[in-house]
Picture 1 (cartoon, rainbow, N blue to C red):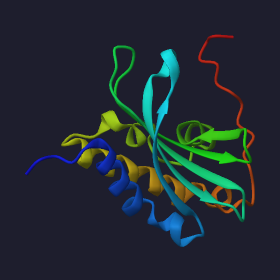
Picture 2 (cartoon, rainbow, N blue to C red):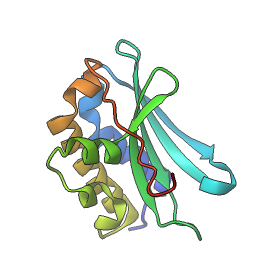
Picture 3 (tube, rainbow, N blue to C red):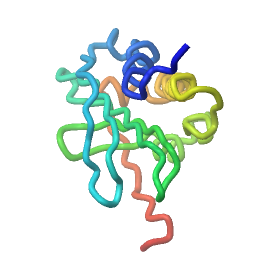
Length: 150
């Protein structure tokens, strides 16, 4: 059987693994191709939006490039310009899950299997430690990690 395209795999995984967000009032807006410029490069972005609590969930798929390995990220946005990456949230709150479990490189198998497994781990983090963030009840004040650049 032929492996589905990354776009189809991401779309399927988002709709199945993050169905709990749809049940909580988020609307799935689909996937768009984003030009991340010369620094980031092109990537795919799936968007789930909840207008009632002014939260948007972005699932971003970054293909492997000369500069970086293949990656999957989940970002929670509030209003237009405030955002928190799930990895930074997990590091800051020490919610109990391992950072490795929300990294695409942690998984083996086809692209579709790895995307689904990674999103499943991300969903578990959201369900266990980010309920008030998703519901709009609170917004964490996470210091920016300069990773030694400052």
